[in-house]
Every structure is written in C-alpha cells, then in structure tokens.
Image 1 (tube, one colour):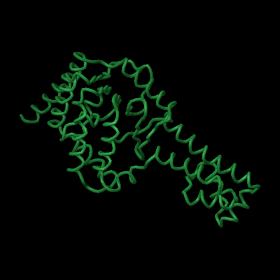
Image 2 (cartoon, one colour):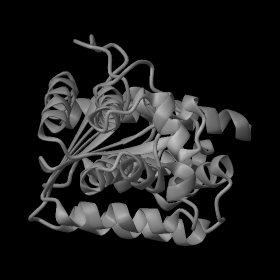
Image 3 (tube, rainbow, N blue to C red):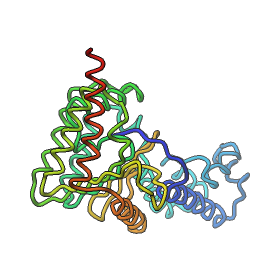
Image 4 (cartoon, rainbow, N blue to C red):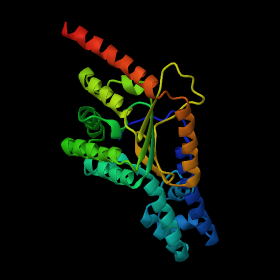
Length: 297
C-alpha cells in the first residue's frame, strides 16, 4: 500500500461522487413517491430536517439502518433491498483506511495477494513509491512502518513485511504477465536510508531481466502527453485499485476500467524500457554510491 495525494478530480473520484449522488436521488424519489415533504419525513423519523437534505444531496452517507427507516416511514419497504444493494456497492468501492487496517496491515496485504493471484495480466503505474510486488524487504519495512504510524493501526510490521514479500511469488509464475510503469521520482524519493535504496534499485535492475515482466521508467526529461494524477493497479480488465490519502477505491465498472486502461497505455508509450531503463536506474545508483562514499570519508 502507498499513500498518495490527488491533485484534482480524477475519473475514479468523480465516478464515486456520482454514485453517492445517485443514491441520494433514489432516496428523494422514494420520499416523493410516498407524497412526503422533507419536513414531513423528518417528523415521522424524528430526525432533524437537515439530515434529510444531507442524505438526498450526498453530503452525508446513509447507514443501512437509515435506509430501512426511510423506506418504512415512506411505506415503501419494497424499495429497501435495492437501496441497500446500492449502498453496499458504494461502500465496497470506497473503503476508508482506518477501517481496512483496523486489525493491522498484514491482513490487507493478504487481500491484495488474493486479487493478484486471481489475475493473469497485472499493470501498475506508480508516481512515488516502488510497487509492492518489486519491493525489497528493507524498503517494504520503511513504507509499512510509515503506514502503521500514520493511521495508528496495530503494529504488525513483521507479519506485514512477510505478507508483502509472499505476494511476490506470483512474479515467477510463467502464466502471468506484469507491466510496471514508474516515474524517475520513484527511484529518488527517500523513504528509506541510502543503503536500503541501493538494494532496492538493484532489485529493479534484476526485474528488467525477467521474461514475464516489463518495467518502464518515465525519466525526468520526458515530455508527458497528459498530467498523471495518481498511481493505480489494473488487474486484468476486471478491477482497478486506487489508493488515496483517506481511502482505497475498488473500481469494477467497465467504463472506469476502460479509462484507466487507456491512461496506462498512454503512460507506457512514453516510458523507457530495457537498456534505457537500466541506464536511468544505474545513474541514480551511481549518485547514491557517491553520497555514501562522501558520508564515510
């Protein structure tokens, strides 16, 4: 897992908000179908009128109990199941980190591992952090320690690192294909000490020699054809995973997957591969070695 900041309204976030608004619209339709004003429904439910407005305008997410009470007060219990299904779909697409990591980070690593194991083609774009499937144990420990500290979750760092490294076994499955695209910034951000970064960069060099792995690097001098907003994982053409500062988005709508597939293809086209990619990595390795030599002198 990685932390990221979104610089604007991305397709995932826009779609998520649209889903929230659609649920609010359905609640309003049920109220109107019952011939009730917002004030009258609030009176029946013993809620403040402002809650009715917030739910209908997607400024507040309803609970399952809210939906059951709403339909009952409207005398339209037959609408309950449809609305509950919409709510559960929405919740599955937007899972807050504090809830996901409540029992520690290792369990979430296992969930990702299961998704990856079920996929045949995995495409990953990262702006800031080495993808988990390519991390060394020491680098993973630095990243996961930050996650545990930031979200104040259970400190299961040893189990989490072990689970992340266990996920990497799928790299050796010849039936699977992996395509990673990362920016040069990923090679340079200091989330771990220089000695750890040297080991991590060497790991990336090794990855470029794997027959079922493509590793592309977008160098600092590359002209982008569009501004990338955030990293994302594409698992076959069935699921997109996006991590924001507050939550994980789990997207399965064909239209959204198509958007991310096209985005990945555009980024992949401007990346460097093979000898050119190794040249970028080796340049950073040399700079780190000079830095370490200077520290030791």
